[in-house]
Amino acid sequence: MIVHSFDIGGSSVKSGIVDVTQKLETLIITARTAPIATRMFTEYEKVILGEVADGQARQPAPTAVAVSTTGQLSADGTMLKSGLIQGYDGVSWARILAEPFGHLPVTIITDGQASTLAEYYANGSGDPHVHAVVGTGVGGGIVSGGEQVLLPERSGGRLGHVRVSWESRILCSCGSRGCCEPLAAAPAIVRLYNSAAPAGQRRFNLQEITASARAGDQLALSAFERSGSWLGIALGVVLNALTPAVITIGGGVALASEAAGSGGADPYLAGIERGLRTACPAHRAVTPRRGKLGNDAGIIGAALAAARQR
Image: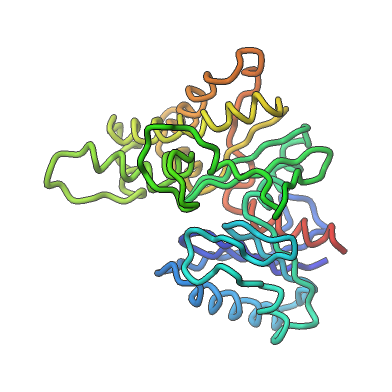
């Protein structure tokens, strides 16, 4: 089965033509990333419609479309609350793609659930498997027995909205305060670094902060570690409730932190391990690790989900 798979994030759309009959490491035939200049849904729509049309002209032509997306989905795949993308609420990719590409079945899944499904199979299928996706926001998923653990409105694994602080006044994309997401995602690292920098200094972005951390800048390393500790606290709650066999971390922040470390050290992962100390001591035997599929986890997981529905 050939699937044209998409992974919609807060700042880019990743796409790939995926052959789900192959081994995980050889699934992707082609892959590319389109940066999104704004957070307007119309820009995402234009990119995906153009990519799907281009995919149909390739050989072998895709026989299905799969979309992994940030946000909260309804049971029929309609976006209930995107948080980060303006004009996205109420959108159904199945309806959008039905008119120009009605002959192609469309599968919709959250980015956290897609990445978790892919990492579950890439990491040896330990049960339960919890995966956190950290980029512009924080998503995640839980797989047990090869199946997604889903709550109403397909919201299982929403790790970014585990409450980790009663003092934080930073507003989350869900409208609450004290959630893990605004304290642990990429904007948190940027905010921590820039707020601690000397007055009058220009603001630095994540890429620049990552480079500074790699050069040994303690302020940059601390920003990664402090942000990671908040995710660790959220995962500590999950440890106490589910006692998972495997915990993996993926997304742009995980990749940035891997690049930021020196001598194999990973400051964000170190922060997660520190935050996990809030879990019950009997449950701390599970050591979180980076996912194996990197930025490809979303498009691979969406394609696997599409194949499982056929």
